Length: 319
View 1: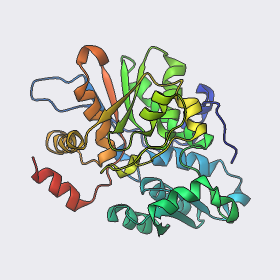
View 2: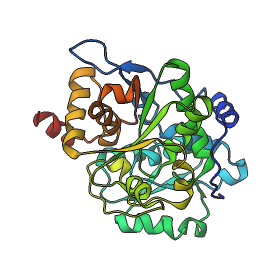
View 3: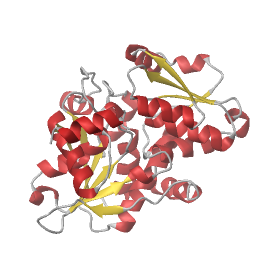
View 4: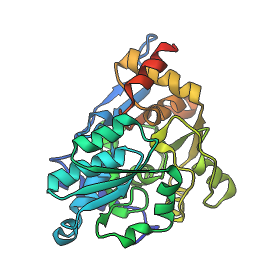
């Protein structure tokens, strides 16, 4: 794996989307439920993917791109849960073992899902998770390592989501995308901007873990304290590789409070009958707080639905 600051090309993304057709679902785009009438906020529902999140796009593309003899050594990654589920699914698909370094605070729903897909979750303290990445410890293991943020094949696979938005809603003016490590927004924004540079790409982070926002403010990759319910985007730093690409692809960064995240989870569950995790609610919350004339017709990437049942019941009960 060689880090690069070159964004995916439209040709690469288009070719990847074609190769992934038998695995990746063309997820629907539906209006946000609104009692006042038709909504100009649209939901790209990645919860319908085989592992209930967008992660299957980039992870499958990266795994499928490996030479068979490399893939045969087994697969590994680092994940709060969704990447690990996608990797475990890919391991079963290609009949090779998979293991994922995960924080011991990861939601039980995600840990159990990894096991059910046939993967091995390796639970360690959160500090160890990020030390594994920063110190490139994967280089000391025999597995083929899939980096969820900086690997270009992952970006290319995620870019297929952008192509679907463009095909289904060519009238879109703004796309809201949650940001953790930055792999998703790098791929999707590359597809959007290569096709229509006038589309606004808005990155969304929780107030309690805003590493991209702080990096943009400082003009260089930054680290921040991280305290948020949105475990899927709880990444306290920007890598040089991702920041080098994403800073030229986005138009704005919007921060969302924990309370707005919870209220959006409730709204999606009760209005659209859609169950989402915290990170998936962020783009919708950001669109709702942005004046309509400032965003126009908007698509929100609803990234995943792996939320613990007890957490969901508590959030719904608070409404």
